[in-house]
Length: 105
Image (cartoon, rainbow, N blue to C red; front, top):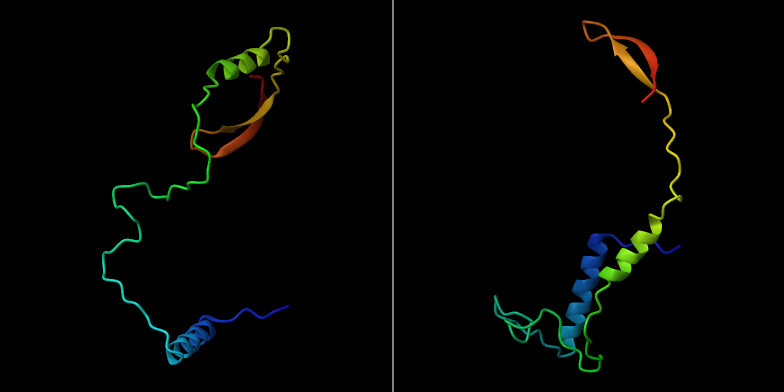
């Protein structure tokens, strides 16, 4: 398994790579503060991909969802609801637990 480098090691490696780049004649371009990478500040956040097919009209599925929900609620399909007894804690006048009682709801 490969050991994970620490932040200090990554920082040192990055500085070495930058120095090697600059020694080979590379140049770092400074961009003024506040300049955005977007082409138009009022346009969409994502670039428009020309090779993607245009979106068609949307199909609303309200009637399809309503039909599915109606099928779920067919009469005779409902399960009988069993009311199970459950335990309820009974407290005395001072708020101390006294006993458990089984309660039908």
